[in-house]
Amino acid sequence: MDFHNIREDFPATNDSIYLDNGIASPCPRPVVEAINKFYEDRMLYGSCASGSQLEVYENIINKTRGLFAKLINAEEEEVAFCQNTSDSINKIVNVIEWEKGNNVIISDLDYPSITYPWLKLRKSGLDVKIIRSKNWKISPTDIEDAVDERTLVICTSHISYFNGFKQDLDFLGRLARDNNVYFLVDAMQSLGAFQVDVKKSRIDFLASNSYKWLLGPFGLGQLYCRKELLEKFEPVDVGWRSTLNMVERNIEEYELDVTARKFEVGGLDYASIYGLGVALEYLFKVGISDIEERIMELSDLLVEGLQKLPKVSIMSPLERRYRSSIILFNIDNIPAKTVKDKLKERKIIVGTQRRETHLGVDLGVKVSPNFFNTKSEIELFIKTLSKL
Ligand SMILES: Cc1ncc(COP(=O)(O)O)c(C=O)c1O
Image 1 (cartoon, rainbow, N blue to C red):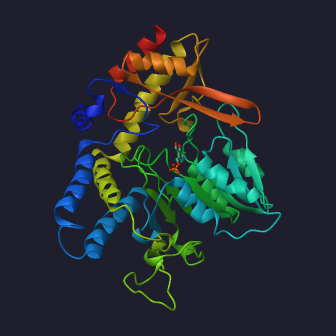
Image 2: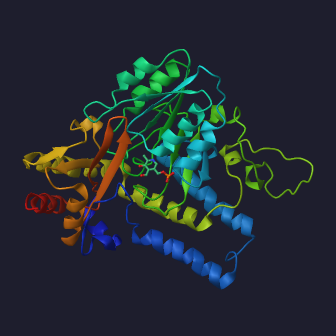
Image 3: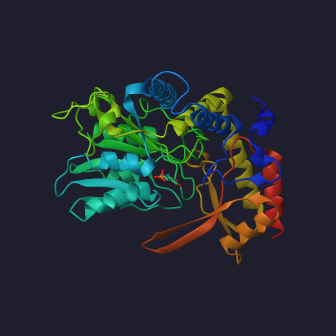
């Protein structure tokens, strides 16, 4: 794959070096064109260009649903569209039955999309075990040690929002299945950049949003629920989209759909779903394994460069198997925000990241290249940093 040709689809690369994909990726040109076209048609023709509204929109939804299912090696009926990652996770957290004395396992590298729904239940007596990071990673064996006969769920980010730590999903999936424990994964920082296989990793539930490595729009979450579990769970919320017969307007009763659509309540963001479909086709064309290889090469270069700078301390794991292309670091005596602002003046876009833990506040500069970035951009970034 020639990654240089791809840059034309990302005008954000024209006059700056965009290294902030862990916050949000720029949308490639075809995705924006598709979303614009959707609204142009709506402006010109009303609710849709041809056919009944439901049929046309359902075709769009089902096409994207199929593409998303392919991305994670799931089946179409196992995927629902939601508002965001947090919405998807709440939908699952709130249907898992538990009693006082049960516990769930999360970590201090997880995003609030995982943390807060469980902390809410802690107030009513659920034991939430928070595994603490050591050397900027969560040891899978620390999670293993925390599992006991009262454990209900192992819940983890695949890749941490904070420092890009990459969790071993295969290990945790096996651990969960062997112990009869649910396995819930927040894949927001990995889908589109790293291969995820829900079957291979024995994932029961997976949640994400579209606007990072998936190159799609804001406000469009996905929820995967393993087929065997769909029957077991009755969603907290219900609406016309959750039912078997979506066009029925029954005043006395309803029948829940048997697929993951039971988690979709009402009308969806059709334009965004259309845009996500185009983004997924784009990613498949480039190739997810090529993307993964490419961004890990850039990550290697980044870490090598940062390690050579005497005043830099890296707050991400260095071992390749635990690393992604989100790298967090600090420079002695220069606040993270100042580093970010100075880089922006030089047309290099990075982010900052903070988290509050029982030990205090951690804050760093977050740099996260994507496949459209080049090696020379990383080299220029390191050179510029060395002169700050
Ligand atoms: C791992 C992870 N999960 C979830 C989110 C965002 O959650 P939501 O889609 O609910 O806005 C982020 C945002 O940075 C994230 O990094």
